[in-house]
Each structure stands twice: as C-alpha cells, then as structure tokens.
Image (cartoon, rainbow, N blue to C red; front, side, top):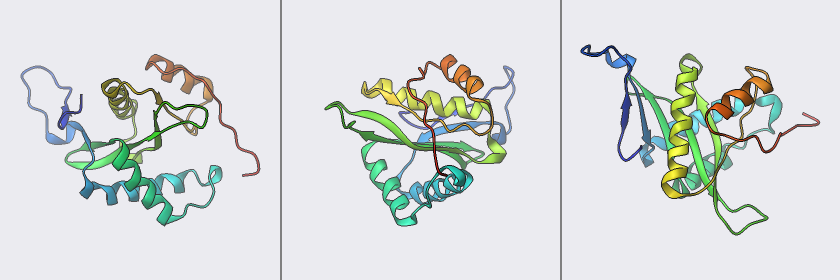
Length: 169
C-alpha cells in the first residue's frame, strides 16, 4: 500500500476534486521527523492526566530511533502533515519474535475523523502484512466509551487482548 505516496480522493466519477479534498498517506523521511516530534509532544500534552511528564530529549530519541526500526506513517491533507502513526519494532520480554508497536498515533484536532483514523489504521496493518510481523496497538480512549471504541476496532480487524489502566495519576 505504501510503496510511494498513496493519494486517496473520494469524488464522483468524472470530477476533479480540489486538492484540499484529498488525503495522502506516505512513509516519513528523515526531514519530516521534527514535524513528527512536534506532533508527538502535542499528543502527549493532550493526555497529560494519563502520562508522566514527558522528557523532550527522550521523546526526540523515541521518534528518531523508532524511525530507524520501522516506518512512521504520515497522513497529509492539502500537502500538509496532519497526522502520523509512529511504529517501532520491539521484542517482548517473554519472546524472541519481533512485533510492531506504535509509540503514538496522532491526528491534528481539525482533521480528526473516522476516515482519517481508518486511513492510518489500514496503513499500519499494511506494514504488518508486508513484513509479516504482528501489530500490537494501544488506543487511549477519551472521546468515546470503551465498548464503542472496541466495536469500531473489531470492525477493522483488531482483537482486544489487554485493557490498560492507570492508578495514581
């Protein structure tokens, strides 16, 4: 799916949409990583009640080291990066087999929609399929109840295997 930039436009046959109506999905290049880092820091700020205080240098290392291990998927609209899914390759403590995990998903608030999230999700699944590495994702739930989020994710092919909880934050 992501050999090169993939442009997704949904318009009636025979019409030419304005560029603003088209979404693009692509892998991040090195020059995109500072933009990814900015969005990562913004995402962490949004979930401040559920995460320890971010260390900017550790966040930078996460973005750059993860990019060297697995694709960082970018969502663009009208030529601007409006979201990303930062993937990393990890080997669980209990196994010798690698898996893909995300260190963060983020879509800028103005561009958040079911369609935008689905485009990024499909792209993450395409990476898993291409490299034949299982994909384990975490989804923080703020904007809908857990059963509703679970239902949406199951429709997309995910299986709920854990529930993450927080205490003392």
